[in-house]
Length: 499
Ligand code: ATP
Ligand code: ZN
Ligand code: MG
Image 1 (spheres, rainbow, N blue to C red):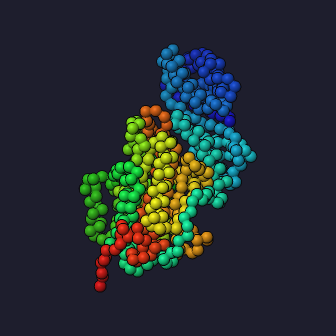
Image 2 (image 1 turned 120 degrees about the horizontal axis):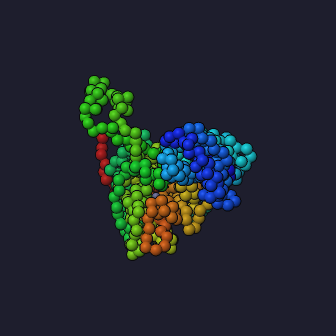
Image 3 (image 1 turned 60 degrees about the horizontal axis):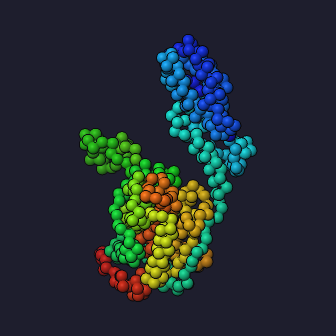
C-alpha cells in the first residue's frame, strides 16, 4: 500500500516571516512523529510556502496513512506557529490524493466507486481523489473506499454461483389433499381480495381466522413455553437504525420509504387543498413541495428496532437469555416482479422473536426452538417440510454466498408446495427461518452484560407463509384438516355474502 498526498493549508496570515520555524518543524517532523519505523513511516517530501498558502507533498506506506499524517501535521504545526508567530491554520484542502493497494483478485468487469477515479492494473489498484476536504479524511472514508473496491471485486466472483444450501433435516413424504394454488382458489371463494395497492391484500373473515390461528399456535406452542415475553414496537424505522444493521446498504430497493410533512402549518398546504377541491385529483407536484425527504421506512424485519431498544444497555446476568418477540409491527417490502399470491406480498404479518444471551445459551435455545417448531409442523400441521443451512441475510444482501454453519448462521424452513409441481423439481417455499448471528448486532448496538460476550439472533415466523404452506398441502376444507390443527380451528367463519 502506498499513499501519495498533495495538500494546501490556508494560514490565517502571511507566514513568510515564520519560514524558519516551519522549516525546522518539517525537518523535525520527518524524524519524530512521522517516523515509526519501516512500513509505518510518513514523509513530507516537499513543502512550499507562498504567503499564507502552505503546500505539502506527503508520501507514506501501509500502516500510516498520509491523510492521518496530514491531520497530525496540521495540529502540531498550528501549535508551533501559533505560539511563536500568532498564525493559525484556517483550512485544509487535499488537492490530489493517490492510494495504491494490492488486490486479491482481478476484477471481472470494470468497477467504479464514488469520490474517486479508480484504475486497476493487474492486482494493483490506484484510487485518485481530488479536492478532498479535511472532514472527508477525518471520517475515514478512505479506508471504507478501499474496502468497497475489494468487496465489489469479490462480489463479481460470487455472482451467478449457485446459492449455498445444505439440507439438515427432511420430514417424511405426505400425500397432499390437492394441488391447486390456494390464493387463486381463495380469490374465487371471496376469502381474500388483492389490493388496494400493489402486493397488498384484504383478508376476509375466513382467511383472517386462519392467520390468527397461526399466530395463536406460534405463541401458545412455541413462544410461551420457552418463556418469550411480548413487546410492541414502532413499525416506522429511522434510517439511523438501518445504518447500524446494514439494511440501508443491503436492501434500499425493497424499502417502503416514509416521508414526513414538511410542515404542520395548514396555511402551507392551502394550495394543495385548493387543487384537490378543484381537480379532484392528487396534485403530485404540489405534494412534493410539502413533503420532507424520507428519513425512515416501514418495518422490514422487526429485530432492528428491538436491538435499538437495548442499545447501550448492560443486561443483568440473571435476565439472560433475553427472550422477546413482536407480533404487532407489519412488514413491508417492495417485492416487485417476485410477488405471488399471499406468499410473496409487499405487506405481511410476521412474529419475530429475538434472543440475546451467551453463546451457549443461544445454542441451547436453538435446539429448544427447533424441537418446538418440529412439534408444530409435524404434529399439528402434519406438513411435508425440510430445514437447510442457507446464506445469512447480511451476507446475501452483499451478494455473497455464505458458508456459515453450525454455531452461527441461518436455517431456512421450507415447505413442499404441490401446486408448483413435483417434489424434486419444484421450488419449495421458505415459510420461516432461524438465525444466530454471533456478536454482529450486540456489537453494533453496544449491548453488554456483566462479564463475557453476548450473542444474538432472531427467527421470523411469517403468518402468510405458515398459512399458505399449510393450505397448499391440506386444502381449504376444514373437515380434511389434521385432527390436531382442528383443535385450534375446526370451522371457518361464514364470511360475507354479496348479491
Ligand atoms: P425470501 O427468500 O422468500 O424472499 P427472505 O429471505 O427475504 O425470504 P427473511 O428476510 O429471512 O425472508 O424474512 C423472514 C421471514 O419473513 C420469511 O421466512 C417469511 O416467513 C417472511 N417473509 C419475508 N418476505 C416475505 C414476503 N414478501 N411475503 C410474505 N412473507 C415474507
Ligand atoms: Zn431479524
Ligand atoms: Mg426476500
